[in-house]
Length: 214
Image 1 (spheres, rainbow, N blue to C red):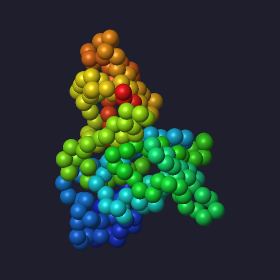
Image 2 (image 1 turned 90 degrees about the vertical axis):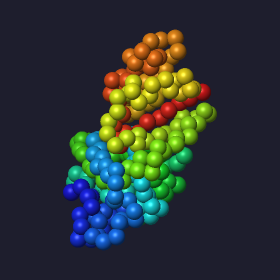
Image 3 (image 1 turned 60 degrees about the vertical axis):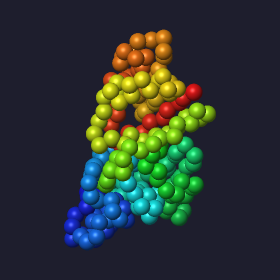
Image 4 (image 1 turned 180 degrees about the vertical axis):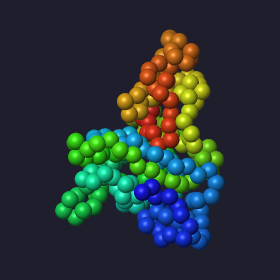
């Protein structure tokens, strides 16, 4: 059921649908391909979508449709919340409505799954990593927490990836069920001031994170 790009098949969902067999799917199917599998559960899931996307491909309706096609029977996406907005499911018109209209691949989002007793499950998306265009630049806000994606093609060890980022002002990184905090007065797991279970968990494609900085 994964929305992979299969030559000769029609485009089921614009963006993350099957490749029609001609053209190059908006320039997004060559080089640095990633397939991200999301482990989802009832309630809130902190995720990111670090794919190169055209404006049409990044429309919230297209990405949610690609995900919804893989949901277990009776399970549905009830909303999506980001740093600057939210969208929720309106059962009357059978659509997601709100001020999030497009997905930003550099940001993370809380993806809400209903009903409350929904079983855990997996869905997948495939596309070109944002790293195909070089190293992305994340603008970290010093006033409010910054919701960021993880752009890597593969998992990364926390200590290797973060290094001494705390010395630059970031002092807290939170993921779903994991967190790390920086203290210049502590040695920490990495030997550089970072402590918390995120230091052992690391970063994984599709993860979302929230960074707090000075």
